[in-house]
Image (tube, rainbow over all chains, first blue to last red; front, side, top):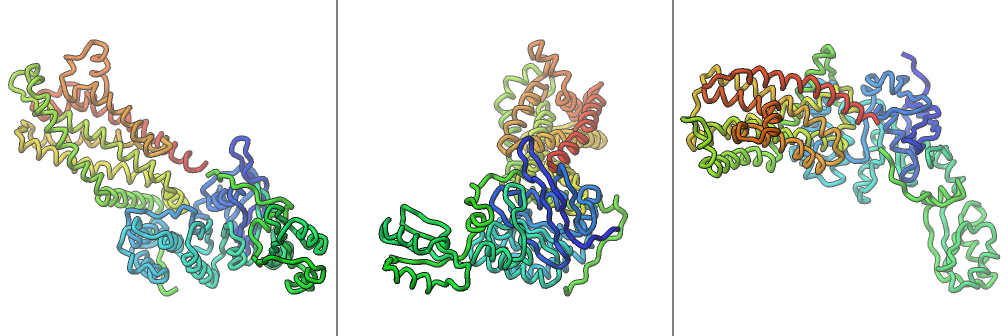
Length: 320
Length: 269
């Protein structure tokens, strides 16, 4: 069997639904034991890409391989080495957590005894022991996601697809999910994660690919992208229009965004020589009074703003 | 990793069979845990049997051959009607699986994907055994008596099993096609209601207007009802037995591959 350098590889992947082009030539490579985050808004083509790579969907152009196996021609072999955790947590609601794990384990070709032992291990690892013998219907959102992830790990596949694993979770469940994913990375699993959250990609991934409208618009490590996107944003609010205009004159090209209704201006702290203190000193030297200020981390909107020069596209419903 | 994983080394066809076994177990567990549905499978046949026999019994028994009570006449019809309506559950389960994304999960596993359909169809049989047993016991309490020998009951079981499979596979097609569970409900209703009522399930077809009679005596439900009824009443089955079996096998031969093909197509788009 031919093994490429990349565990997951997509070349010029294309997919259309009728006249709608969902993927317009996606390229991506994931090296062994690393995590690639596919970052983009709803409808960018993230889920479509994952569905193709996990053998669920046919495509119109390009090639896709996992562990060197063609996802169409050798789908059976691909399915033996992958685990998939989807957006809509796909566990059987009328089965208990344990029954879900054991059933999926056997469908992964584990022997019954092996599936049983591994299920117990995962229940312990994912903090689901107490709920193990309750039907999944009774689980909270976070528990369901954990069970969903546990199910995809039942046969410890070397490649895992995580399709928006934390969308819709509360902050605490999100953190516990992150901890689990980090542990998974330490074990050497190759992971493709999709997310709408920049900080999630930042926290977890070795490499980030930003896609929009079916095309890759940027890729690199988190710090490479951050350099492009800029660091923290400083949002300044002024009392009125004239004060704001004066501030805009003083700050010049450092201002990346303004809001004329609320008299706010956003400054990116890209240059290490310009820090928050300096911005404020400069403004005060010119007798421009700042009413209030706030610092925030770059969001997906900011990524799109700086990478494409346009605002984040309106959320489109992603086709399945 | 503390637990050492041991993978099956059986040949593929055995593993595929095991997939179906696991899916049957899953669907059967659904039937037992889905209390509302289970209550339906339990009480609906009782209700139909008692209502029909008491409401229509007086009027219809006059047009029945002498010596045959309406309850004895009705039993075959109600059993077949319950099986036909019960197949809706297969359609609902298939549709549910497709809507809820669990089919995606199954498809990402190295398993035989059609095992999912097998699971629902076979467990449908399991539910029908519950319903039919309940119905026969209720019948015995309110006065149903049969002349069938154990061998006849074996024939009856065979005919009904084939018919259940045929209808469940047809229902699976509806389940794959329908865009929502609600759509399944009315689709199966529209398909099955006329089929069961325009048959000899509840009244002798001889009383129908001519055009309806032509339809009624030539459709599968009438054949199955007539065959089962003749066996229950100890009458001659005539052509009905082999016609019933042929209909069921014919439907199966068409519905099984069609449902499988549609299921595959639907899930790979």
